[in-house]
Length: 139
Ligand SMILES: [Zn+2]
Image 1: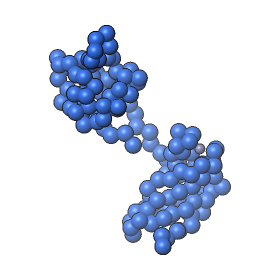
Image 2: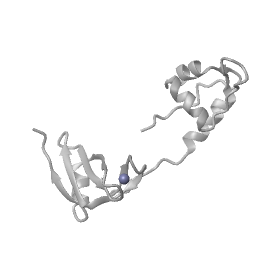
Image 3: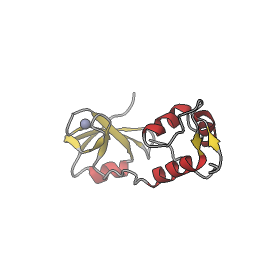
Image 4: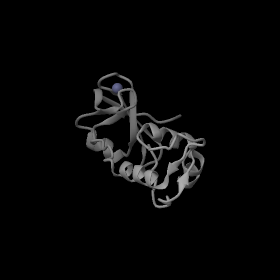
């Protein structure tokens, strides 16, 4: 899951390189380069490329306002479909990590790939009417 980045430390009248922006925000240089593809304005007529503080601030602010994807109780995020999906065949496996927490895995209703999410025994109980869950204890 993407980390939340705060624009608070960005000085709007400063200029940043990919490296200095990355250091400032605690993300990798690669992340800042990827932001360029998602719309971060970069001054690329000179080397090194520069990012104006206000452009960086603007980009991060807009980005953090983007609604976060919420999964319904019976939905799982399928990485292959990149979408929330329900369980294929109404079956799932629960692997407890602790008494209160574990991982619930199902097959994607569309591509039949493996999807999972963290879950609790309480969630499994709530899902019981619609999902047949097998508890798998790790050896
Ligand atoms: Zn899928």
